[in-house]
Length: 455
RNA sequence: GGCGGUGUAGCCAAGAGGUUAAGGCAGGGGUCUGCAAAACCCCGAUACGGCGGUUCGAAUCCGCCCGCCGCCUCCA
Image 1 (cartoon, rainbow, N blue to C red):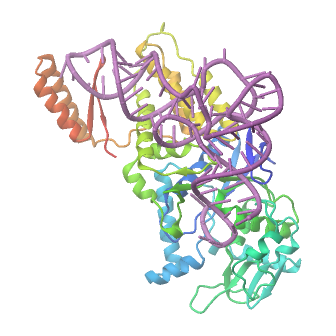
Image 2: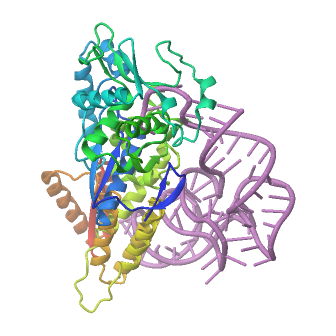
């Protein structure tokens, strides 16, 4: 299995350090609704985790919530609520969204505000080792003391100096970054030996990764926009603190969701919320859309693309609805070659577009074999299993209530009687009436079947 | 400006030196059907932004040019 490591810029063979694969994924800053770009990142890492599981690895997955920072405070003040309350509300919404997208939960979701002791411990260690300095109640990291600074993002300090736009007098050097920020009056704060304040953004991830996963972790993931400065800073502070190299063995970064030829982003308001998308499309369609392009490439959101993938999802689902003929002499569709090709695709840096292509080829083969009355049970199970690695449920978007189902069945069988008597007009009236209510009737050789299409 | 990425059929998107350039959606033709729907079969890029070069052979490697995007400030 090969994965593309941002640090080396190459595909490398993946070998975890120990039996359990350790994986840290940067989570959200909880100050606003999650958008479809977040869905992209977390669906991608969900698939990576599921695939590692499929390959027999046990995965320990940690993902943080940033629940204290400038934007949270600013937003909370605007709304007149406590920052902690705001963060809690949006992290709850995040869970609801991810559950609806069938994103499996991480093992632990640490929150910055609950990891202050570890943060302080690291900052103290960095101060003691001379990698950090205090200034007016804040603490900064001395990037010039870390020779490897810039390696992950392929840039060097000398190129960046003139570009550093925000020069704060409190810093020794413009690119030094805050480990601890002194709090202003009225802001939430935690006590520390250098005064009241709160953690800088980057330090929480180091603290959580080191605390829950150890000094060297296998996989660290996040969106490509985090490469610099966030992940660069994480490396600097973590390796300086532990004196262990590398902090992360495989850096994986997902491409960003675009809309109107621009990055989708909270700060620009250029976004589609996950909730809105889920109101219009099934989670399978959303996942199919996101996974139909390679995870490291950007993807442009469009309604048309989602609609196309909804139809694709429907096609996969419907291959599962054929009833197997219990004829022992029937030929069996062997799904093994498909599974083999699926694995081959996924082993190559999680090539989900190719893996999905295999799923569609298997689907066609199932449909064809079903017409030939071959045994397709194994093939259907394989489709379900492989789809599951991509987090596809392949379930209908919604089911009618049991009551409604009874009525639908009654109408369908009445219509069949009418068809028997060639009462086409009445039969068609029932069919179109049901269609208006979201029920599609299909007359097959095995009788009439129906689908409920409402989301 | 620096660094990174990207440009493949109407749309989305794989492929990264060599048999017929995956797959999905849309479209056309057909089979089935009372008609539909679904499904299946057949069809569609002599062509991979442009121009050169390397090679027996390039969408795939190299050079230049053009377009688009990201990061360099908070961001998944």
